Length: 271
Image 1 (tube, one colour):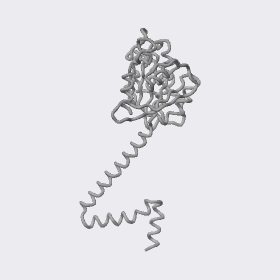
Image 2 (cartoon, rainbow, N blue to C red):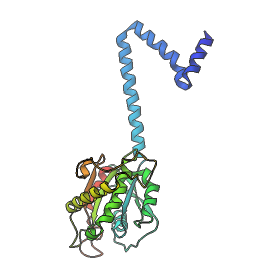
Image 3 (tube, one colour):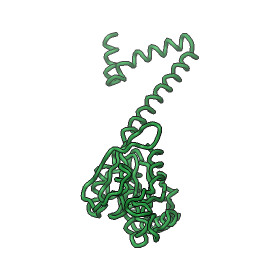
Image 4 (cartoon, rainbow, N blue to C red):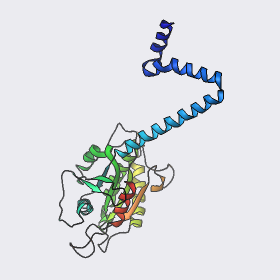
């Protein structure tokens, strides 16, 4: 009898094989006593396993606390970063490295996030995004609303790559396009920026639909954005892309308060 049990343990392999004889014995005993009791036990086990799985997913999500600020050079990422952390204005310059700091969210839970300002230079932005993307709870793509008209192609090209790579991550981050510098008279509205980006991304999708993600060739990112045979819209994506208007500098000079309340509310929502 001992040898038979040993064979069963060996065949099962690991902890599952070790406990299998006891589970079989328990099942037979329950069936003999009351088949209804067996159904109840199975249901309870299913609920328990579901709760364990849910807790595991929650713990993985809670470990992702980074909010990545990305965008082209001079889009205002660094000033937004400073304003969110200190509320103060500070002269900034193009950086060749990242900056990070803890940010206390404006909510009742006292939640904190890690803001990471990534370089916007063309030769650096993808390499830094690759380094931090796995820890991203959210991505804030900052657009210069005042110079958007002349930079739309560059903005769309970078956004195309960031979206593809974000969709390929196991835990898809929340995604926001922050239309910055709204204090400037010639700034484009968030609605207009969204419409023009959709047109430009549709063109890019046609020319680059067969190209893999340049950020992570091993990821399972889709080959293209949106639905085949239809004009591209952000609503077609499996992740929700939101737009809002903001101004890191403010409307009354360097010492004025920034218009970033909507951004702060969004960060509190996704925290």
